[in-house]
Length: 259
Image 1 (cartoon, rainbow, N blue to C red):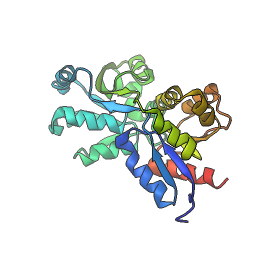
Image 2 (image 1 turned 60 degrees about the vertical axis):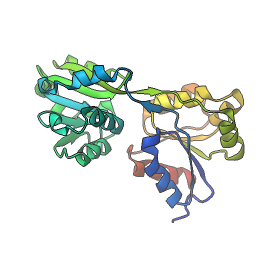
Image 3 (image 1 turned 30 degrees about the horizontal axis):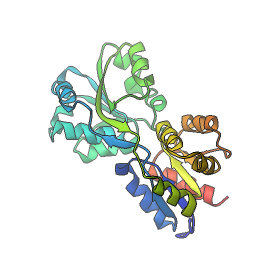
Image 4 (image 1 turned 180 degrees about the vertical axis):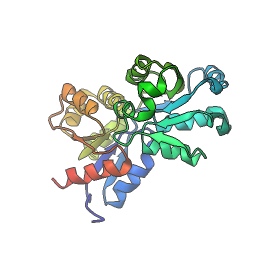
């Protein structure tokens, strides 16, 4: 089964720091991983402002990390002083994000057992109204994004602040890169891990390459991405992974490749 993806070309659109393991898993199965990040992660626009917010974490009861990237940039801004997080009840959006915290020496981390999204997170007992009412919560995330988590926690009686520890931007590529991908190495499958990543990919392509994209099979990690794909006009129904981990994505890719 090592060559189950033989001759299959898989376009990975994840940010640079999150794609290596998935690319390795694909190539171990005989596939060709083509990495084209459609989101570029950069430091926060005002690093000093965020560091000032992080200087007094003692006033918070709960800290929520919405992604692995949020963990990486928070630890960077804390400059190694991980102990400043120890007095908070720490919540991670999913197992992979929790593992990133554990690698930093933080072993007590709560995380959602289902999908790595806000909906699953809001179902855990530690974030119910009885647990958060009157509590101060800080959400570690990138600039912008969904408001569901914070809005729901506020309705449950919590006071919520954001620590926007990084920002996402759409990368710029020379057209020759797109010519190579869509004309010479046309992907059999495109992996999308966020609505923003899909929208960016769509927006950065020429009309010719966009038509080719819309005829390509997508593997996505959530129904919200599938809804956007339908709205953009994809001809094939996206395959939604059971879980958002690298192994979960690989499983979906293998299933699609076997069709």
